[in-house]
Image (cartoon, rainbow, N blue to C red; front, side, top):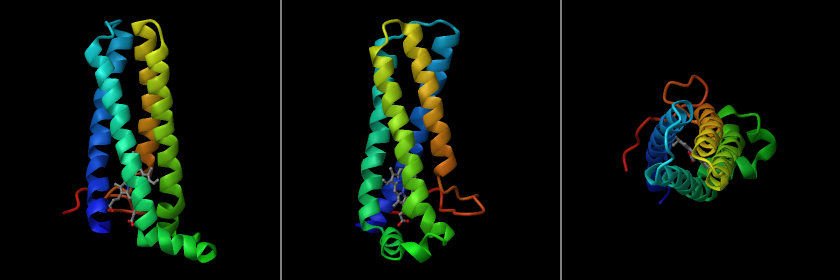
Length: 154
Ligand code: HEM
């Protein structure tokens, strides 16, 4: 189960990123060019928030079965000084939970706004913050500190 979930969590990262980037392009264009907030934009908002929630579910599940996290929790005092262990045991989870909370709040706020302009603006601002947080906490394959493959075989 662990290798499968790890590969799934790794793959879903791309869906999270793609959906956020598309949403942001649509939101900024809509806000700056004063476009109409159509039903399909609303569906895009919902899909983007849902994909991030799916990734949250995979991440939480992974947190409970990951040997790295087990080691972190069982040996907190020493493990907190080990870069990679601390990253997955603490930093990644905290920042990603914050990012997904920001995306959820932004999506809910956009839903409640009354004009299309306000909806686009709310989506643009909150999703940008969420995306930036996510970008800082992905263990990119090119990261010098903690890195993981861009794609992992199932
Ligand atoms: C948008 C949100 C998230 C993204 C884009 C993301 C992305 C990633 C990526 C790319 C990896 C490396 C996978 C690999 O080794 O191939 C990873 C590992 C991991 N993620 Fe996330 N993650 C997110 C949210 C979360 C959340 C919310 C949790 C926990 C609550 C979590 C827990 C973990 C754990 C425990 C690992 C490493 C497990 C291990 O190597 O044993 N992730 N994540």
